[in-house]
Image (cartoon, rainbow, N blue to C red; front, side, top):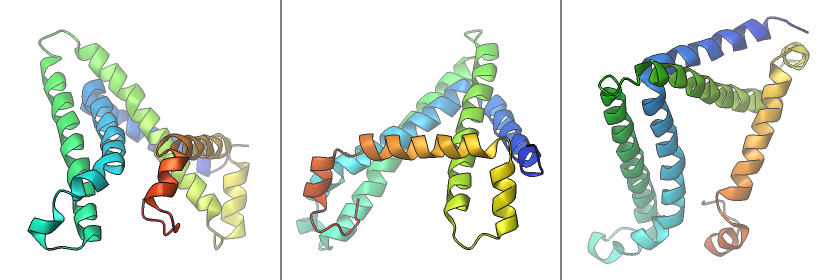
Length: 178
């Protein structure tokens, strides 16, 4: 059933699409790839890279790992963002501007759907949400598919980001750090 939640979600999706139009396919997709690959590289290589620093920096291993994680993430992210920006700028000369704009809308709306899905998932998981608000979200036409999409994203992220054996080795006490 369509209610007040649906037009809000639709407007937000359209705003993400508009943002994608202006950023273009190359900037949108390379930015997304930079986020994903940057996070994966940082998770995978923060510890080996951090072990190269402690003697010279006189900092605790935890601080060095956090700094290394952030550094690796941003280096990869900015490298991908720069590549996307360069392709975006060259799209005019390669006569790919229409593809760049339409693809940007599609990728922008996809990113928007993922963000909205995760927001709806978090709202649905929030125990102190008023019952009336929860009911409006449940009765919405767009919110349930987005909630299902978020569950799939979370399931894929848990299954593929860090293999279970490595997760147990990296965090044997289950303290929650990566």
